[in-house]
Length: 362
Image 1 (cartoon, rainbow, N blue to C red):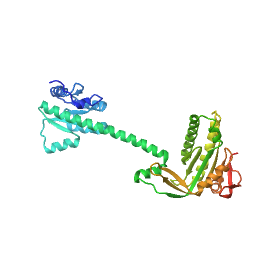
Image 2 (cartoon, rainbow, N blue to C red):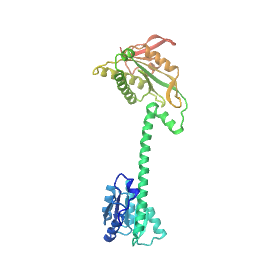
Image 3 (cartoon, one colour):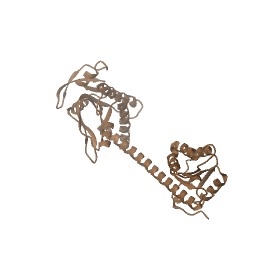
Image 4 (spheres, one colour):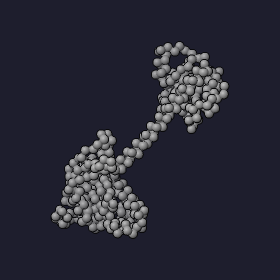
């Protein structure tokens, strides 16, 4: 009987492998000879030693294992339990050849040990081929499902990563779990807004690809600094950088952490300017107050913050000098004594009137 064409083997890009563990050399040779009739591409490995069989199974993870019920040193039930103890072999079909009484009690014990199917001795050639083909199809189906699950997991990881790039983690988790996110008010949040000095003029002189590359490098490092300090960037608008501390996860030390992170962004730019051809400067404002956070939009959603505290921070940023950080009175009260801050002064802020401010930097 020649090897017959079979869609099971044609559809597989890799070789289908089968392991036979049988202490009787006659049956070992017989099983190997019979199963090879399924396809010339079927690879069959044989051994009379169960321990050697376990080693081969662990190393190669075959598509099907055929073993005997009674073997020297270890019986087939114990051998199956050992195979199933190895994670990568938990779903490999196992066929047991048996000449013992397959009573209901014996069958239950074998199935609990991980046996997938049985065949009686003496072997019937046609039955053996049919059962092997059936178990190989089961193995192929499991591999397909496993591959699909890996792809689903990969796509989910990509989706989660994309979601985290536009939403804070706490909000992203809430959105994934419930499908929605309600607006939340936060009483103690420190807001940082930074703007690149002279960006409009420079953008007209630098090729757009280079300009985007520069912004990407700067803001990526700003993000790193925020993350290291327990702060979070919410968004960028053109050349403006917007970060917060104390939301959506409260933080008792939000004022100091945000000011420290803001100062590190300025320090980073100074270091970058010393080695890069295009120098950049920012001015920044920091204010502490009450804000509301919410997801805006449905098809193209984004997380945004609202409240007068945002407007106040923006006014401080506009009033700062290049490479200077300007703090409001409320933020200053949270960090005084911990940082070298200049004496307070007053500014006339648009829509705010006269404000007491404190500066760090030139």
